[in-house]
Length: 306
Ligand code: THU
Image (cartoon, rainbow, N blue to C red; front, side, top):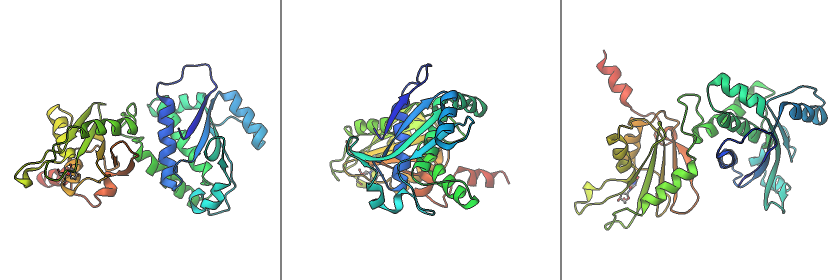
């Protein structure tokens, strides 16, 4: 668990919050190039955050999130720039690099979630990601710094499916999707390559669909795991894909044909593609990164409309 969650408010904690915030922290630290680093997340009420702001920063006002980094980052540098400096934040008790603490104001999170029309859990995810980048040396005091920080946040949001639009889908974590892909891998039929692949597509409506590669004596008739899962989704009426996880004997990014098939049904080009070896750790890229300058349905439909 890359975060330590302290839920310091009386209301009930959203289901699955801890594993969700851990994924948020993981996505941010991985993007920065400091995987495994951790931090503490305290969820507090409006009065407690005001008190923290007063005591630690001399500001007598409430706010949505406060970040307290363990390390000082010289101007223009962030956690990923200097692994030696980062080692000074190693905490033997945790067995990890401790980036610091953040405090989230549950009342503000609730208000902001209502304004934006999404769940408190999702808003806590945004605030945690924002704080994670502060804890790694990012800031938004100058326009340039702000652009850099926002760009990192945006990349993290895509990997976590925390898009502004369309909403939904965060009840299944990337870890769960990957675990389901590992399950599907067991069904792979690959006597010719001995390369087994499983896939799990998350549809926008929250349903998941499994696929595995199935080969053929006439080799060209082989179908990849990704297209097998896509077929299962489409026949069930799911034509909007929010994410795909792929587990293979060795981590493998989807082939060109599968990227194009995913492009057809992806809710957007920020759709995460989660890839790893069966039973191991995964990495995430967006479909847009895997298929830049792509050609999609709107290009043809636009032409037809002329
Ligand atoms: N394969 C997939 O299932 N997905 C990919 O994206 C790459 C390749 C399968 C097809 C074939 O059965 C085996 O891996 C070796 O190419």
